[in-house]
Amino acid sequence: MFHCWRPKSPCPSKGLKLLDFPIEPDVNWRFEYKYRLAYDHYLRVRSFILPYMKKDPFTDGPGGRRYIVRSLYFDTDKLDAFVEKLNGDQDRVKLRIRSYQSKAEKDMLLRVEFKARKGMAMEKHSTWVSLDAYRQFMDTWHWPDRSDPVLSEFERYVHLKGMRPKVLVEYEREGYLSRIDGLVRTTFDHHVKSAEAEDIFPNQAFFRKYYPGMVVFEIKCDKRQPFWLRKLVQEQGLKLIANSKFAQGIELSRSDVIRATWSSEY
Image (cartoon, rainbow, N blue to C red; front, side, top):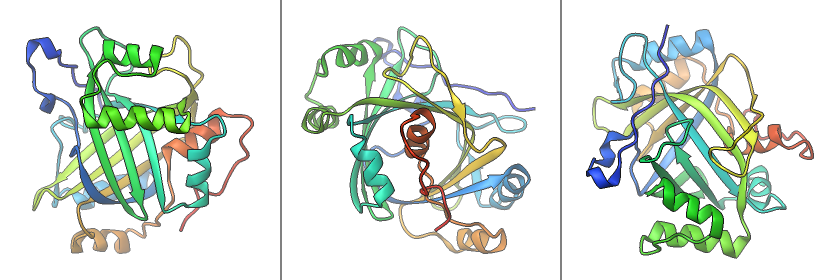
């Protein structure tokens, strides 16, 4: 039996470090590969990677503890970002605000992310804001402090494209880091669900799960996959999928969106 665990949010006034969070590199071009696994297949894949990878600091303990990831995605009223994803546009941008908790707390921090994709490569810029700053942004569509270039660019896109919160996605994450060079990160995302929402902590949300019993496996590399990962893909028969939690969330939460083919195998 695993324990679903979340890191405690640090309070800026107390001087706690952001390294207390399950974070990823703030700015980095990287490659992402995604696979969908049945539970027994997930157990075999996890067993394969353990000699090469170690649990990240937030996936620890007997059975592998997991932490909550909750993301609020932005799009236009016409769902332009969703359509760009479906069309496979090589150059596209994604805006989201992320929490590692499912409930708001006074001294928590939220992660603001601006992601740009070019083919299989992805560049992510991110920063942290207080709950108060997030609330002010949601009320005015302006950050109280725009000196941070990530916040400035995030706000610019919100106004340039007319983007607003559209879908909320939540799941339990199990993360691993390479024992060899630290350039590879893998994650297993369990119980992925989504809801139409305009806030990261809505008063009420009707979540829907997709692919019950399945686990989303992601490989994230600063460069091409090392040999042992290629061996994993071959020996375990992993089939690359165009998995997008954002697109899945839009599709499940919006009755006016026709089911697409983005979840199919490449």
